[in-house]
Image 1 (tube, rainbow, N blue to C red):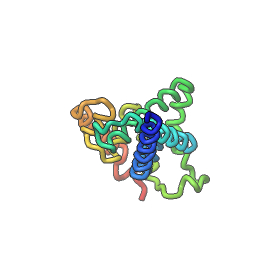
Image 2 (image 1 turned 60 degrees about the vertical axis):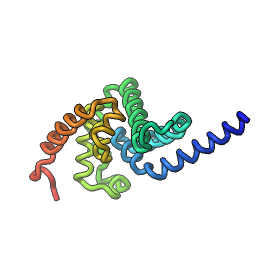
Image 3 (image 1 turned 45 degrees about the horizontal axis):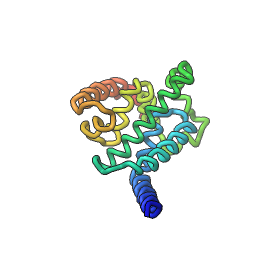
Image 4 (image 1 turned 90 degrees about the horizontal axis):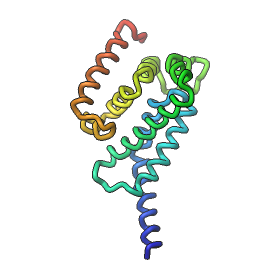
Length: 182
């Protein structure tokens, strides 16, 4: 009986993961690219998020929305990834943020596909933010509400709203109309 129950829960875990991956796969990829500037490491991070998402469905009880759950898992894996990178290569992590524009250089046509100059500048600016601010901005760009971002990050919705307001002002300053080549 226990083996049948384990098998049934494993099946539902697989089904829950497949549904979440189908529904949020693109968002997971965007989130990973927000946490990691290096395209190869971002792909690895996507895989890490998917692996942890699958594992997490063993203990998902539905106390929050599926969307919040997926973003919480992605956020936690992304934070762990950043912390690990900062511990292993503190000077390289910072210099990588300073040189992000070089990742999408014109001599790399694969990086140019589907990207434009403004998007690259926006991502470069986001990558230069402090990790906590970057997390909030990435979740905001995924259309999560302040309350949902608070659920994911552990911040109050008021703190999230204040941070979003400050970050939007910072981004607006960085993207003055005369600075953007069209």
